[in-house]
Length: 281
Image (cartoon, rainbow, N blue to C red; front, side, top):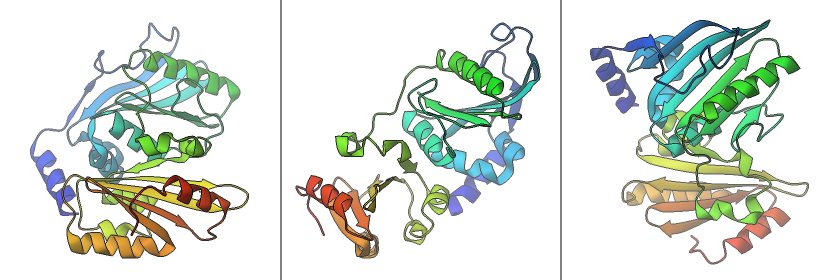
């Protein structure tokens, strides 16, 4: 956690900036929503995000936070809170979306990578992650939320993050909306607390985690990537600990792939067959 303490100190020593959006981010304006009232319209950069969401900001900085636009909008009788985060790349945007989405009732409402439930709409598009909350949960609020999201999507460049080749295989297609990208110990503690201690002293890594379930079996896959050569002791610890529930593959180029399953049923066997050409440990 030392690097996050240092990061907070560095950002504390420099001015945190909050200012009117004024076209800086691709958020809607009065011309997009005639009759709407913009009760709040701000951009947060630097350490200002900590002042807004306190400890919750750490996760965004871990993934590569650039800036965030905050709007509170009144449209007729409906009230919305819009948070649009610009991250430092499509992987970071997809990553923060992947560990933030929850309770999805509909997908692909506005863009391919989105999640709609009664009270919240989320998407990632290019370098952006959007969280749009409504306070009534009405069908009218959901329609307006989709309209607002469409305005933002039309002003961003890029669509879905291109997944690693392995996860593009057809066997994953029915499960891929559950894929998570974990970057750093805070994301790891939130998404995979049982294995987080293995990564406590590591940095510059990312983990793709996908849980898969059908009527016969439950399995999950972890693809672990680092930006440096593995320390032999750390690698051995990860291999021996994660390998207990299945099989571990060394993909080279500082990548490990873990396949785990309690029941070792048909789904697990399908995945084993797919991965049979890899080097296992």
